[in-house]
Image (cartoon, rainbow, N blue to C red; front, side, top):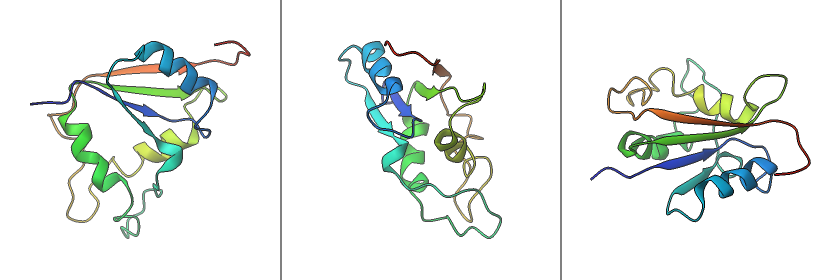
Amino acid sequence: MKTRAIAILGSSRSDSNTRRLLDLVLNDRPIEVIDLARLNFGYYDYQHRNAEDDFARLAPKLIEARAIIFATPFYWYAMSAPLKTFFGPSRGSQGDRPSAWRSNRLPRSLKDAVGASSRV
């Protein structure tokens, strides 16, 4: 059975305004939040030096989820660096592990972005 949903927190701070807004949106629903600030992701490189980063153990969760919520602050009209790095190694294959993003089993995604504000 597929997991209902997971949320990917792309903020550089685990206690950010983006996290507070995500918690409000989730409203105590039993959805796992994956905090990229607490994981190890390398930039994509053709020598596969980052093949053992945390993406390898996260990819099956992405494939099994029915929905993925991406929560990221906007910096200069773009997603955060942690979220960009997260998408990097997932674009192509890493050695013998196939790309999760190319899988036709990935769910549709809901993207959540937060602008600059002192209030949540």
